[in-house]
Image 1 (cartoon, rainbow, N blue to C red):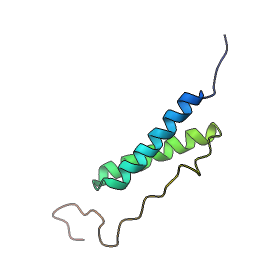
Image 2 (tube, rainbow, N blue to C red; image 1 turned 45 degrees about the vertical axis):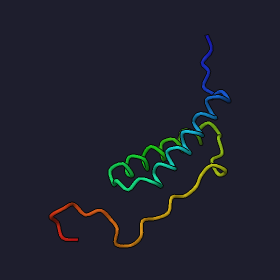
Image 3 (tube, rainbow, N blue to C red; image 1 turned 90 degrees about the vertical axis):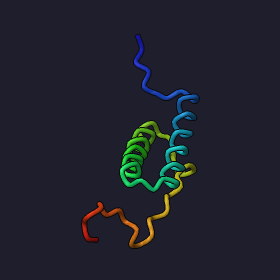
Length: 79
């Protein structure tokens, strides 16, 4: 029995497509909790792909930072 620990080309492509999809969603979504979850998911995916020697430089598109003064403040609390 062999222990196959490498991604197939199809798996690699699917993971890269997932990375692009999550990146696009993070760029379009303004819900702070969802953005935080997407940041975590993208970080984990980058670590996993890096461990498989998949270079993300061609796929990584930084998400623009939120403009100053737009950070989420829970209702009822002063900013």
